[in-house]
Length: 233
Image 1 (tube, rainbow, N blue to C red):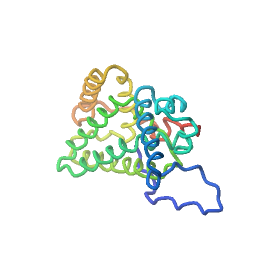
Image 2 (cartoon, one colour; image 1 turned 180 degrees about the horizontal axis):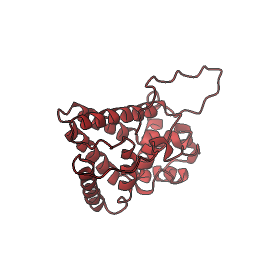
Image 3 (cartoon, one colour; image 1 turned 90 degrees about the horizontal axis):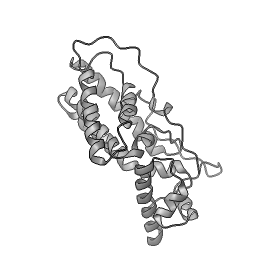
């Protein structure tokens, strides 16, 4: 999970330049429009969790009780809807990493990140695809994910410095872990959590430094290479 090159937010496009359509901001909306927006986001989270981020937009509109035109007025592209629907989960990931970096025991912090993110993934089918997808138009979402990548790489190095994390662990192995953990998602919440916790425990034991055999070279599994950007509509 290599760090991105910059954290600086992109400058807004000049008024004369046509940029990608932007989602309607929640503030400044009439009460009825705000209610529609909230219903759309709630329906999207439910649909993405149950069916993944490729669920038809029209199905989300029906679940929300609004027309497709109303949905597109608030979220002109699928990417804008997905990134907004999962903004809370991404913020929580950043918070989990912040807590881990403050842990006086970097190995314990590293283990807590693996366990908590795997648990989040186990109960939310859409989270993996949303986290691994590219959203070039969602500046804040991209910024937070870039920060998460940078912070995880920093945590990995700290855990290695303690001698508890094997030297050949690569930050991109986190992507491999997410892909493996996604394979246990799909049963009931209880079964998914139990299976995910066991898988995470197995993997953490293999990540610990000690009497281990050398691994093959890391695969080029950068987060933004796993899933392409969702289609605009």
